[in-house]
Amino acid sequence: TQLLEQSPQFLSIQEGENLTVYCNSSSVFSSLQWYRQEPGEGPVLLVTVVTGGEVKKLKRLTFQFGDARKDSSLHITAAQPGDTGLYLCAGAYAGKSTFGDGTTLTVKP
Amino acid sequence: GAVVSQHPSRVICKSGTSVKIECRSLDFQATTMFWYRQFPKQSLMLMATSNEGSKATYEQGVEKDKFLINHASLTLSTLTVTSAHPEDSSFYICSARDPTSGSLYEQFFGPGTRLTVL
Image (cartoon, rainbow over the protein chains, first blue to last red):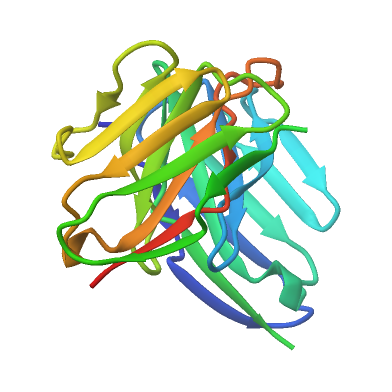
């Protein structure tokens, strides 16, 4: 079983603050996806990272894939209430995707 | 692109009845679809992988006779919860892979179905 650990599990911050969410594993993944899920809805794909050391930016969100392709981070700059949601990472290995436990982010206005 | 729909969005049923949930890929053909279950404030739990034209592959601990999956076409997969009981109440989400997307492992999710069994 390929395990993905996300930290922190819960995060509550004020609007305008920065934050980083981590996704760690002992396994090497061929690619890794980040999703955001709002309450009562399905997850929405944010990004896919493939190459070790890769950095991708999506407006105020910065995604990084570790050099060894075992871990990833998501950094949000100047968080807004609209960023509130459950953030999930998913690692791809041997034809299957494994989801992390998720990070529940609450951004207070 | 890559839109997935689910129907119904909410369903309330009596214990002992069966409920069918539909998952459709609207603008692409999905050879592989996935069914997940999600409990409040928790991550997704994969129930089964559904491949068009073949039997679904169920995860360990998921009763195949309880959760019937049919993937009869490249755009439709159905999950039937048979003889539902209150413990089956949950949020069920489907996803699909778009073979034309940038990554083989990207999944596009439906909006989910909230099942409540009384």
